[in-house]
Length: 487
Image (cartoon, rainbow, N blue to C red; front, top):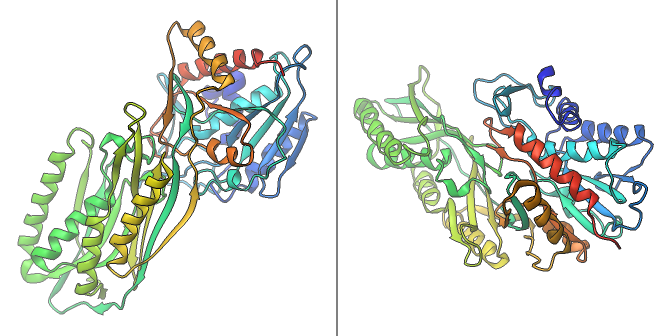
């Protein structure tokens, strides 16, 4: 790991981030980072323990003179999204993140950076280790599996936390103070089909959609970015209708909370249509590129003729319903909020499509700040896929976070921000799935707020963290700790 990261200011923040990023920490495989965090707390002589689901809690007493202030919970999640470029050789299970400085940004070489939520976790670690930062009694809550199921937050029992105020350090624009967020639900469609032998006189093609930006399926869903699965389906739909194209395999996207950047399909067509097929497909590609020229200038679609034609394909009747269900299934913004300007209320991300060997799976993440609207869109997706004969499972539902207009801690943060920057912060609700709403179900009286440094491109290999913003965030956090209200 480059020493230049450790030399950045504030060093206490960046050194802890470098320590954390040396530890592999994929969602649902957090054993090493849990052990790392427990060793960290114990090395400071602080009360450190795991709860039943393996969240890590570290308690630090108030500094002298701060004993009369309300106890606070500082919260972040230990796991990170693992995404890499197709040509990047990297083992997330074994390697630490390879970081470098690019002007005002810290980036990773070909992978996600882990600033989401590593910088928030690092800030909490730096406060726990500090000897000169005034603060009230602190409970540091490090949750697990936020990115793929909110498992840690959903299973945190009531009565464990003693703090009255929660500071969630997991937002990604440093001029925002978040007081609400969307909830979410996983929609999974699956089906089996009997493959059929590839007809004689067929040729095979590999179609690759790549070069898309990807991004966070909540925070970036409104940007009009390309979805590799929807683009691929558009090609397959056209090829099927015009040339009888049949699908052998599809591998598209990866994680539910990442807008899919790449999709690869193996298909066959009758050899007699070979030349016309390539010409027609290029016309469709040109249309898509024209539509996305502003948001996705690097979109690339590659057609490779295969030396060996696939042996089996999806039957035409099953494929007829599949490509139409994919076309009908909503992707992107579904509704904007009537209560907050420019806030997405409800959306869906068609995140992952896997087809082949007689099995089909389509994975979506549906988000909404309105619980009933979340299920309305989920049922719309369910209907599209059930009409083609899929089994559809709705799972992993978690609630949104309802804004509290009477928040005492918000009244602390806003004047501090104004004093430090000379500007007013944007007090907002966001379309991401922060853990505050879930934690609030078992701690309904806890006053919650969320803020963080500027991070762009989260959940994609373009993820980057602003150095100057991280300095601003650290200064903001330190003054907040010194001004927590009295009990």
